Amino acid sequence: MKITILTHLEKETTTTHDVVVDQVADALRGGGHKVSILGVHGDIAKLRTGLMRRKPDLVFNLMETFGNNQLGAVGLAGLLDLLGLPYTGGGPGEIYIQEDKALTKKLLAFDGIRYPEYAVFSPDADLETGGQLRMPLFVKPLRMDASIGIDGKSLVRSTREMMERVLDIHRRVKDSALVEEYVEGREFYIGVLGNVMPQVFPPIEMDFSGLPAGAPRVLDSKAKWDEKSPQYKGTRAVVAELPDELRARLQKVALDAYRALRVRDYGRIDLRLAEGGEIYVIEVNASCYLEQSGEFATAAQAAELDYPIPVSYTHLR
Image (cartoon, rainbow, N blue to C red; front, side, top):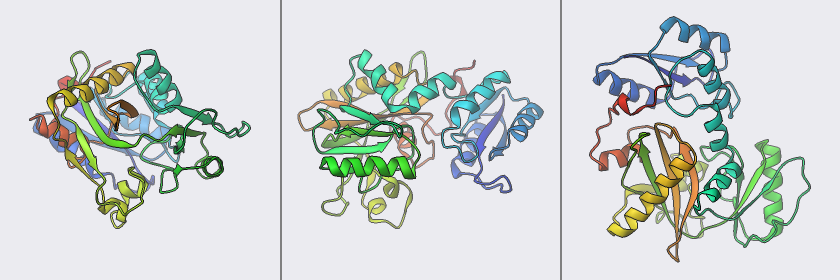
């Protein structure tokens, strides 16, 4: 197949892209496919011209933002639809409901899947107290991913702290604030690959034991991206060693959430196992990060699946 990998550039004048792009390209070439890379920052004409010139059989969509718009993935998928190009990952409708964490929870509720109780505070609404939510609470942006807007102050223990954090998200992130009951317990990431008969990977557990005393047991923006920070050094993802019954329960919840949110092709479901044994869906990450040392690829390796992911798993529209 002729496959074009679509990726975001920090600037229109640069050619530097994320390392995962070359890793995916090498894997696809290893499978015998003809691969090109199209990097764009925010130039729609360049994007359209580049795609039309290449005429790919498939677009491997690794572009989650467009220009400076962190929520550009919806419009990008819509453009690919209008151009009539098959691509990996969800369409604009699926991406929209997956980005909006409140809509996500409503779909999970319809299928009887547990999630933390929550409230949403939009910038144009009067602040309330959070209703019947029980402290402590976790406050994060409603639609952002990659831990944007999440740091050591995201976990709050009073109404005043909650309100201050909500206002901070309104001012700094320009998004509504999602306030959730904090679930104390173990954190797991479950990768899922495929559509008609999805394959559920072994659970990956986030080990927080290296974090400083008193630090929230969460993977905030520093833990993800700042390699020099105590948060980054104090957390690590490991293949979980679990009893068969618990592993099966985690995988079932992940697969149920994957299907409820209409995830296409591949994704990662973040779960919390509460001290009482209940499993809560924290996040549904469609088209998750595919870097070779990341949680999804590590879980695939534990499932004895080599990094070159077969293109036959993708859903061609």
